[in-house]
Amino acid sequence: MPQINITFPNGSKTEVLVENGALGRLYKSLKTSNSKKLLISTSNTKKHLQKNLKQFASLAPIVEVPEGELCKSLNEVEKIYSICISNKLEKNSTLIAVGGGSVGDLAGFVATTYKRGINLIVVPTTLLSQVDCLMTKVGINFINLKNVIAAFCHPSSVVIDPPLIYSLDESRFASGFAEIIKYGMIGYKDLISDIEKISNSNIREKQNRIKLSKLIYRCCKYKSEFAREDPYDKKGVQIFLGYGHTLANAIEMSLDYTHGEAVSIGMVCAAKISYRLGYLDKKVVDLHITLLKQKGLPIALPKESDINEILAYLAHDKKTENNVCNFILLKDIGKPFLHNVPLHVIYEVLNGLSI
Ligand SMILES: NC(=O)c1ccc[n+]([C@@H]2O[C@H](COP(=O)([O-])OP(=O)(O)OC[C@H]3O[C@@H](n4cnc5c(N)ncnc54)[C@H](O)[C@@H]3O)[C@@H](O)[C@H]2O)c1
Ligand SMILES: [Zn+2]
Figure 1: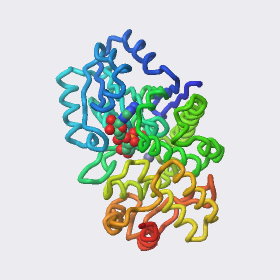
Figure 2: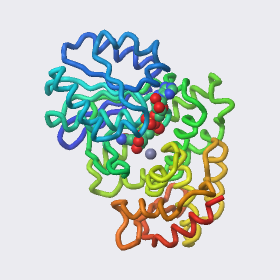
Figure 3: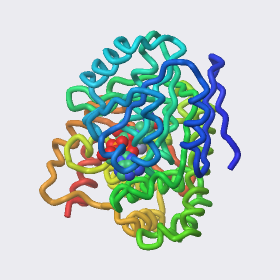
Figure 4: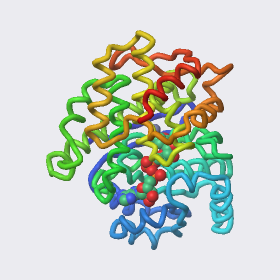
């Protein structure tokens, strides 16, 4: 698949490669470079990708960080800064992030801020991170608020090797599908028929692996178009990539869901609000539910969930002011728009989603 290139206004460039065997090729190219490197991953990722990562040990020290959201903390940022300093990493040194979106966010934040920016190579290893983590924006969690400390980031390469994801469990596959469905809903209707064809039971079949690699490529291409058009979030174009996310971030903070599971509920809620306010046809709400359910994703909140707590987190969101949340809604597939939604309307819809 052709390489995707993004050039940022300051001249820095990100190349995105989606190719079977891309990680092996990255190793070969890094072997010939003299600059200092540090690889960041997690113990679980290393365990699953043992064969693929073995050779990297001779290239760079490998730093293990906590799994999932736990690594996105200032404490971990400080630890990596210290390791960068003790390993004498300079302006031309490279951080290599191998893992899901969390590891990418952590490494991206460090690479952007250490010495005003060092080289970053991201190797996403979950379906979610392969379809959605170009790492042009990175975030760290703070005082139980998700991505509240954040920065723009320009990785030099995003190296996507689709076969790396086949050690994921079903819930992690589902989580990635939530983001693919998001792309389908905000503007890329053509993705939907392909999404419908792949299910948890046939995902490992050869022809579906090929289909999934193509879906990954197309999502990266779409995301790169947004990043190219509005690299610093000034035109409000990238905002629609956050469809389902305003609520998802609050749900993730309150309940034990993966990012994709929370996005799934967030999208169902956004679609239901859109319908309730008279903007969206019920058929599109039903399509959300059918696709998300088919991938094994939650479409409702558990009965015991504390909706007031979720709303309290939502009140912290930068899009909420005076108890009104600037929410991404849909007029149709491919027609997202921003709309002020009072928190009480969100409460009512969430209450109806509580099973
Ligand atoms: N900055 C961005 O561009 C961007 C975009 C979207 C999401 N994100 C962030 O990404 C995070 C979610 O990322 P995620 O869903 O990738 O999860 P994750 O990074 O939290 O990883 C989840 C788990 O998957 C395991 N894992 C990783 N690769 C594996 C493999 N190949 N086989 C088996 N297990 C593997 C990890 O060890 C970890 O325990 C969120 O924090 C979200 O905010 C960032
Ligand atoms: Zn997301």
